[in-house]
Length: 587
Image (cartoon, rainbow, N blue to C red; front, side, top):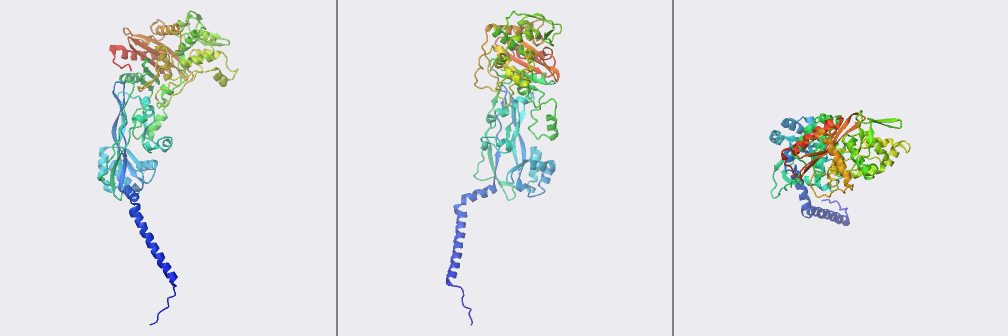
């Protein structure tokens, strides 16, 4: 038999044997690495496909009034999610969900597109599912892939009040805001976070700590039972906060300001705690808890009355005649006038080629400083202000907390404006203004702008002779504001004049007095001219009965005269608080 010669050299033969042996060794090592060395790693990866971990939101802390009554609570709502890769793997998923829940497929698709982050992460599809909808989803469970739903503790509000601007609302966390958080491990995309008001300012206290629940899924992403030996982590609820608000006073103030544009604040001058806080118009506090429609959102943001604007902290207004006590303090403290110094008011004042009118066209006759405050005579202040240096008046105004923030425990606040010599030069040029500008400033007009919140602190300073506390909504350890050093004689005149505003026959604030035995009301009205319409109406004041005291600030946009429209509202608040020994904590 013929045999072909072996043409392969032995060296190549052994080389081939060596390569084959090496490849087998390499393959065995790789098996060893996968099965032994990297066992934990691949077990973890396998479990990540088999085990699904869902974060469980923590119930936020409650928001209470000063007497422990609940203002903001939680109630459970269900949110439907879809895992990106798994839910799009079957084209009929959205149709099945729509059939089970009654939610339109286009709506589901839009939510999926808007909320999509990753094909491996849950994407929000629908919110506020009912138990009936969840039950029907369970019936269709075998026809769905990659579907999960979570229970969220949603905010629910006391039906007696709105307080939407002070309480604030929650918003889903987006990537832009998440990038600004210093501790990103505490938050995930889609988490609810306090976005305004107390909800935002006390976010770290209210939010609590999330938990984790585990369950097993099959290859299609459907729930396939619990995990043995894997314990769920329960969420830790947030801490409740007790505010200084009083539910009944808040309810009354909201009722009084329901049909007007403006702001109202009731506070305790001895502590700085706010008892009621209203910016009107406002918005329903539950507006942002559900899925707000585009139509509803457009209605809110295009409303000419600006319900989203917090007029208490961010509304800027000329103070009008309520500013006159600051001017009076400046005149007396620098001894520019005496208490007995008088001017004659014929109803107008001529300054070079201009005529400045008093609100009383018939005039007030002979007027001293006390009478000028009681009857709110403009002509007196037109003449007296010419003795004042604008920078000195600016410093005096800041002593009474005009032109600077109050630092209340809310996330947003305007500081207002008090004009100085440099400010006027920058705005008008060195030769573009004169002493005549001071005439408008003397009656709280011109370049002066304040927030109602600043005016509330100003009123508390007047009520306590400069020894009040900073304004706040949640009790905490705080120090008094820097004491305002003014002579006792000046304080006495201001108090006497503000008392006269209420009890004098020609006092502009007579309608603020509920005429309760042993109750002394001190006040001042203001009518601030407005170039865009009717004047703004102001009332500031405080009531004192035995050891009880409250202060009130009211500002009604385009309301008219303060004594006619704002003072009667103040009377209702004073009556509620002091009549029948209304029970309320002092702190």
